[in-house]
Length: 103
Image 1 (cartoon, rainbow, N blue to C red):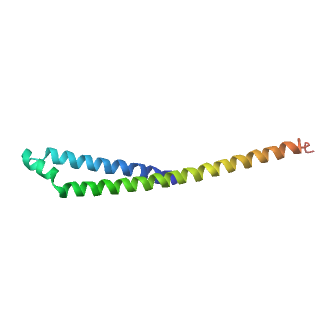
Image 2 (cartoon, rainbow, N blue to C red):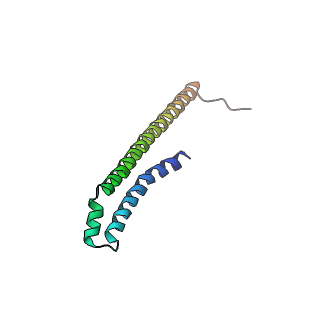
């Protein structure tokens, strides 16, 4: 289940990027005159909204990246702990020597 969360988090950034690209394409391909489109793109309202969306997406992507790193480090630590425990158990069994056959 943890991998499902990581996959969803990775795709969220791409989702936002696709949304921004789609919005830009929609503006450029809209049935308006060139002057109207340039005015819309150049308007401070549009730029302000685009900046706000980009900043929010960047913040979320950073948070998701941080969470992913934390999860990766936790899983790596668990794996290393389990690996060391397995090595210790193997050494203990080897020190005991072979078990005598049962009669």
